Length: 394
Image (cartoon, rainbow, N blue to C red):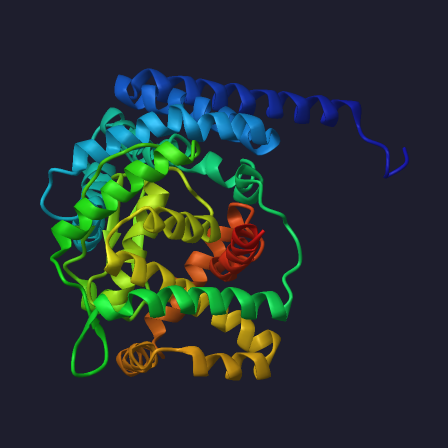
């Protein structure tokens, strides 16, 4: 017999062995589901449903638009309302308690694996899988479809064209004129930084009022009145370069209050945009700008125009150094002082290991959602702003 030929008896044995393994695996899975708590089975079924909806959203942008506008809006509303009455950030508290939770799980795992029954082991495993399922289900039913739906420029009817250096200059000039027109009503500290003339709770009310007007004007912004959450560990958070974060699983818009005042209203408006279903970072930046323009408060307007000007200036400095340098003569002296004060503030946090790690994580997350530019997508707000300003001049 040729050595390359398969012995029929050996082939039959292999088939029987494979069949036995599959049978045992099937029985094991069946036993696991029969023994797992009913609530865990509910989580597993919900995960399967969420996965189907996630796939459909990825395949059909119109379906993703429907999801983010209706079902997801309901779940974001419920999450925000459930946590808005808690006087601190629930998400931040979970992060602080994470080491304790992790150690507790390890200890429980060791105890159950050595002294517990098989049913207890299955219950613990099912519980851990259910916790992971919760985060995935929450993501799909709050924010995930927003990464797959139609782009904001299409919703607003803005032209998607390549931006020229001259257009960047014109947009920066427009924003500068707007800042110069209101800067007289803004107060400044001796170090040159502006001072927000009210507390954070009043800012919250003013931004909610602005978003109420914006949601009536733009159908893709979900109506919602919510409370901002101010991060207790804002100083350590600054080393990560994170100014704010929307935690979809708690429904909270968390704000780093350690940064200079002029960044806070715009950052808060950005996180509130996520809370209202705007997933992509450049789009959340632009919706924050649009919503801020609906406010009649001069400091919120100042924050929106100044932060947007920074994005445009960064793009212009790369596109045309000469035009960029010529623009500085148009700035009010207080604007220059504001930028200088920020540079001085940021020196302390500029180079840190925490920022490198957080940037890599954020970049990977965004790319996993189909945002190929990753963290650089924040700056793509410039394209939207230039297109928007062009429509104003037409």
